[in-house]
Image 1 (cartoon, helix red, strand yellow):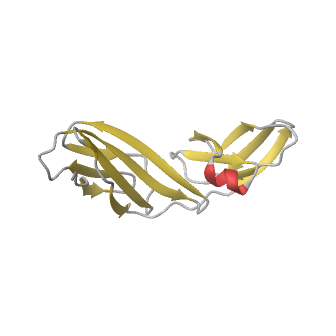
Image 2: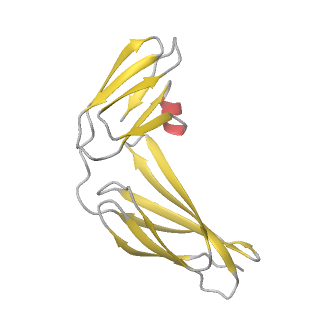
Image 3: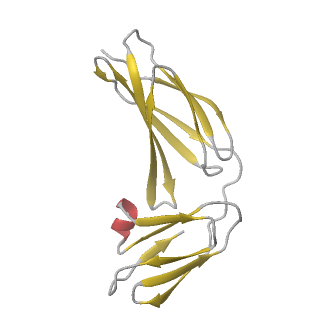
Length: 163
């Protein structure tokens, strides 16, 4: 039986998490697959996937949000097959940023100007879809460090926006 990998949180800060991965077996490990999950605005679960080569590994994940719960799951790729999943939870330190105040205004039938308030020197995600279900499951999205963006949309549709 292949055991799950051990995920150990080495350290965390306002915008990063460092963790190590190891196996408690003599089975040869060729690498790991790691998923980092977090929830955006209670509507959208985000995920970042890392594919890591090698047996032992210390990883640092940057560009995270302060005071946000993250779930890290991992499995090992071994000579005998994939291991079961292992999970760990961590909340980044600091104070969570205030949600931006969004205004969306149609420029024409296929363009919407989005503008918002919020701190400088951060990256904003713009998410949009034609239904709440689509906004949750598979929204269109883009990122910017500015406080406005023009989004191209399909004509004759109504859209929901999140920043």
